[in-house]
Image 1 (spheres, rainbow, N blue to C red):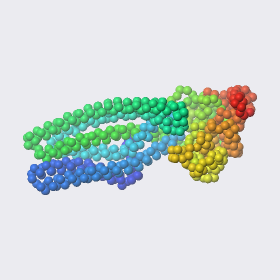
Image 2: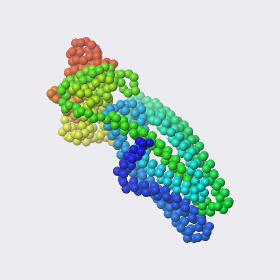
Image 3: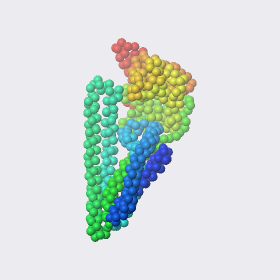
Image 4: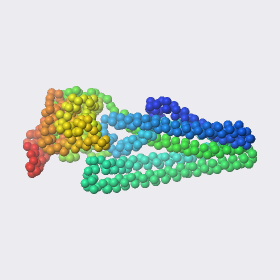
Length: 599
């Protein structure tokens, strides 16, 4: 509850920041609505009593009061709803931006690769509107209770027993809370189903997967599997909704019994002449209105319970982001000795197998380091650790003797640049797609042209209809580059930090032929970041082509998560171990295919 109050205060501040006058106006309209219920009931009593007494002025006054209350109620409700939509939309945008900022501020990526984290994030992203409405749900509950209290007071003025009707409101509230718990459990249980169904259907609408589905004809299979997940989600939701509805019906049955009791009391009073017709009319109006008020209170309480569940996810993300944040020492502007891993072991959260096991190696300052190994050897995991995407649970990673865990994560990332095998395809303007590699120089034409030259992306940019101003991607009606062109743009993005201490090139050239890859890597090494060895810059090349590895000063061979060999190309070939075997196998393959392979 304490957390919910904290988030309530936060959403109220966001609302006031968005539009203070609208907040005040909505609050006044809510208060007026609570008072109008009483005004309507009193006008009914006044109308009947003055009509029976034959007082025309009283009748006209009662009619005027009722008409004004009705007009103000209808107009006020419409105004309040429109203003709430406007205000909540602005707050929803602010909360969505805050969630994205919190998510992006987490230095590691563990939460983005684990199902339970992804389910929580999915529920949170779907619940931003609930968070935006939180302060108004509390306000609505408060004014609904105030209106309910006023109605009960008027009922008790006719007979104290009539006020006891509120006791029959307790069962609906309790049963509604129970039904809400059932629904919340269902929503959590269905989160993974919903996410998997969305991802499968999304495969049918993305160009990458769509091509293969069209060729293989597997679109129907994917659609059927997604539909099966959807149907399972609907089944679970239907069962849970039915159980929840039965509990709510049971609660309202108690209230119905109380309402019958009111009618019995009223009939007795009218028979005994203890109540005027106006009082009876007011009681009947209030009794009917009481049902609506209770429905509203029950609904608001249920909404608060559902909101509390979203608040829990929001607080989890906020706490997780806070716990993951850390400050530390600034990384060296120039790496003097190098980056060292000592006895590093790593397994992904939720798994039982080490991906890296007792890895010890050194990336010396001012060198080009190659990493090779079969699929699953741990190459990409090593890259994630060096770039700070994951923290190691065992062993140490140091930069010039300072543990990487003690360096400021953001500052270290500012000294790192990388292009990955699964590079992103940012559907922005071409210049922005490259420029986001260093947002401080996003629109710097000199830096952009230098990055394009280093990546060999000049022909790619020249082929675009509007050059760097070309909109990329079909989502926004832009040009769809080929996979090779996307790769060149991604390489250009990595080259936006020419002074990076560590440059990682993790097999991003799958669509390039061996000669083109060799030329590209040679250009990166000779013209790029390692041209001046005195700056202590390190280039880490991950590739399965050994023509590339010949360019490295040091080659690290990974096998089953372990470093099995380390040395220069010539040293490893003379050693006649794993590297030499893989090297000869690839050379033989090129020879058979009639291509010039690694020599």
